[in-house]
Length: 444
Image (cartoon, rainbow, N blue to C red):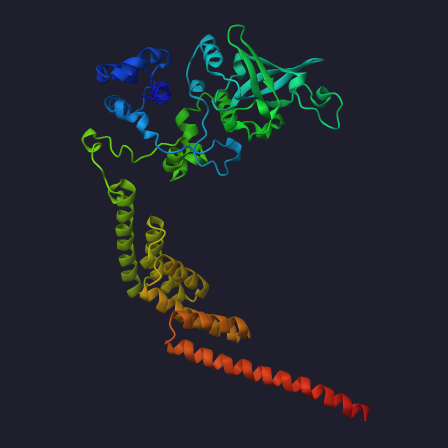
């Protein structure tokens, strides 16, 4: 069993889950191996949440599957600094202990137990001496995510661990009391409870070496720390309230993103049902493929409803149905063609062309998409002719003929514009020839 995943689940759900696990996994030797370590990780249950008992029961019964290392079949993404993850693709939350009443002694012991060389910490300079400066640690910012400002932990950054700058002979002259510093853990004495940090990039573990160390602004403080400060200042700020406000919580692809980030496959094993794990399933049998088929079917129903609205002149309702279909299945060809036809009917030629082109990208042989795109290109070409943009119009007619070389409207439009361009060229050439003759007449 993956003891780290199991410990995280216990920290979140509390002692009630631990009791259920001991009942359900009594005969599981893998669980018995880690049970002594897990006793230290159990905390008081959150309580008050509907349905949590059923969730805990499910976890307890399926623990041998849920926490099985075989889930980790994919290579995890390289960890990125959370502030560099544009748009917050998942909810970045304060550590759970912020919402729990844990003794400070226990939290300090956990920090000194879990902190490793190469981890990243953030602190504020509280004292500067000739041999270095001291930090009051605020939080951890790489690997583990902990907020520790209230524990009043100190760390020393020795002068030899401070990179020199060209503009300062004395490296310490660059720093002031109150500066926020991001540093890497150089050494940790768990018995004497002493931490030494470094500002040299070489001290970081390989997964964190891309993160820059040194002075940071208040805006660069880790997101989880900023949210912890907010939670600590307001007793009404519950874990659930903060979670629902996070932009990443609303991301519809958050599950897929997190699975990819931690390197867990949702297809190996393919099911929580033990009887299905021994069978070999084709790719089309998995949930993602089935969900895609279901979405296509549901989107098609919306398209049919939209076509019915269109036939009866209810264009707004038709557009709503087509948009709904494309929300369900963004690559639904029938929805793109139907919406493109409606755009063309309303005179939004460019939007219609875009939809028809997208439909052909997804299905190059779609008959109606080709037909309607050909007609719409010709219509747009005529608009450009009226604006005297003949070369651009000619290009659209060529595209239309490339789609359907037998289309009579496209052939006629191409023939007419070719004649028009040739006449204009002849006129311009005759004017050019007339200019030298006129000059000779003036001289004579």
